[in-house]
Length: 394
Image (cartoon, rainbow, N blue to C red; front, top):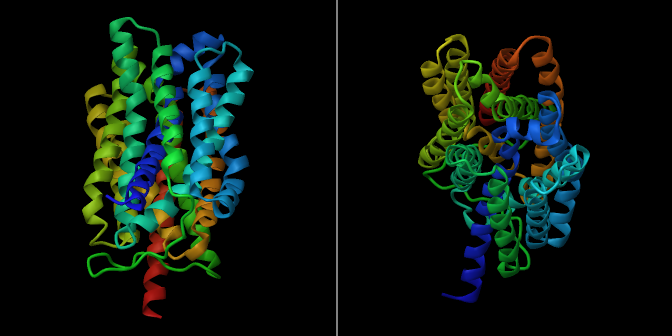
């Protein structure tokens, strides 16, 4: 195998590794929410605010991440991203100060900004004929990262081991990925994906199309709100059924497994169907299963429907990024960063809003908010599909 081929292969591994580690970092709070409440001696709302700190770091840095990626290359971007994520995961269990934890979460959020800007550049260059499918695979790795923390917490609690071990293991994994960046190519050209007969042209250039851009960003904002609620409050919500904590984290694990499996299943489907159609269909399916999970006051029904909601929702983030960046040419990193900026803004505002809702009513209120957010996402998806068809006809 040529040296160039080896480095290209490493870059793909690093891109998928970035999805995996960011999934882990943003889910650790939800998986360990009850023990972190005791560890820092704070309220549930304050622990949920750590997720806002993560999002704040992402929002502050994500646009600059796009500039850094375009100017200095993906290798530098990934190096900074993995370093930030390593710092968070390694030092979080050592620290006992709540405000230092807020800073560590902001650093991790900044690390995720490099996922937003760097991964689309690598995957579009390496898989020009199947970009949307490659992005779906990336979402599968993110989903894998999301289910690992609750799975690890369930195992550790069952074995009577410390939750700190979870952070230590994942921190070591992030550092290994950081070392791997030294074997990546120095730079990437922002390739324009080719369209093949098997992959329909799923994107519409929204240069000058303000309405399309608004619909896309609204969809990203409220989809991110749904994911934020799920990862932050699922454990606490399931415990209101009387389930022990190790069982409650398993429900969050199943949602993440569903998201990962769904992302894998939609890899071949995205080669045959427009990303716009997948966006609308999966959004409707997610609402159906999420709504039924909330309305049925049964742990068994919630468990099954929540897993199915994960199955259909897992691919939505990669679909939105694909629609946004497929025709972005040399500015993929910057466009992806703008979309990530909106997602990060949602991650800041959602815990603040849902925290007030939970304090005023109950954890159920946060999930009702997520159902309303899904309705708005569906409206945005329908508008994007309509605008896409109108553009094709013209």
